[in-house]
Length: 157
Image (cartoon, rainbow, N blue to C red; front, side, top):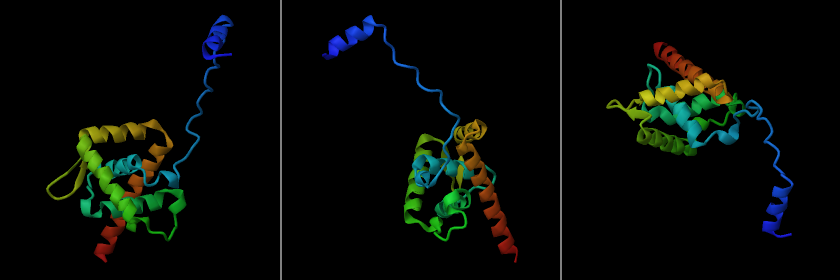
């Protein structure tokens, strides 16, 4: 049977492909495979930069690493120190460059990273989605606040 004959017979018999199976609600979780992906890093940067306390570009790679260490299950309690990873820092710079070019973030004269209104809109949409990414982003934002609080306490001592 050739190609044309196949489709002719399928047409005659009114054969149809079955509909795709119903999609399950986000069965997967964020894992270490996603860690150095630019979209995830860009979301982390937007999450850190949307609040009142803006991260400085000089500490952004370290902050992203620390937040991910505290959030991603494979790195919790780990001694790997991904905040010091050169690969993570390079990809963080690439993610920040993308965010700036796309108009989702800006770096001000004090070298602080701020999410633009369009960037904030993306973060709000993700947080409202109820996906594992939303949960991870909330945990990352909480980790950032904890890191800031720990630094303030250290400075007071």
